[in-house]
Length: 206
Image 1: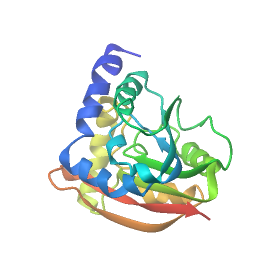
Image 2 (image 1 turned 90 degrees about the vertical axis):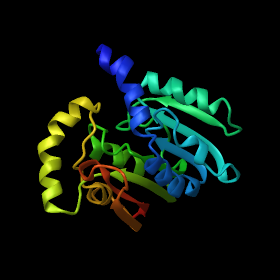
Image 3 (image 1 turned 180 degrees about the vertical axis):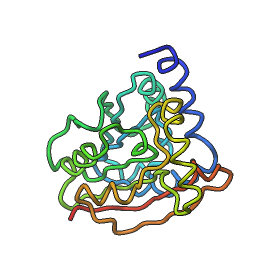
Image 4 (image 1 turned 180 degrees about the horizontal axis):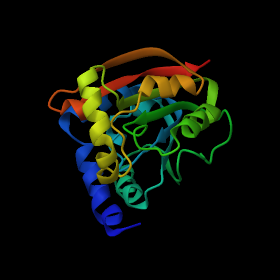
């Protein structure tokens, strides 16, 4: 890990993912999580204030970054919720099969290196009647915007710690064996279109 990744990138990600429009998106989806929850990519803990504590049994917060993990621990220390942190990547989730009621993933599918394996892992740990709740930015519906996303993505991937701005979020979720039962999408206000097309919804196992 270089100096940029250790000291600057975590602060940049925390700032970039905490804009007012993104907080509004989090407010839409996070309160839907219930029971035993796996938050994939808990990062610096930006979702923690938005949980409906009356619906939460326990949260497992998964993230491979020690630096972001430390930020999240500080936030969780002020909460009454039971939060256990898992310092690991999503490609190998250290939880048993069929053990989770809700998988929550926000602004993380864009960054996971082996995303196909990771989503299958989320499916593995999810109970048969469980739900994946997601909110992600990704491939835009407009051809001209997609062209710019594809041009810029190789450079942004380096600057943004592996973030991809052109992933087809619904296709990735469905190809892993999920059925998307509700889906909304739009360009997030106040955000450049190449970064700002959001998908959010709920998926269940086929």
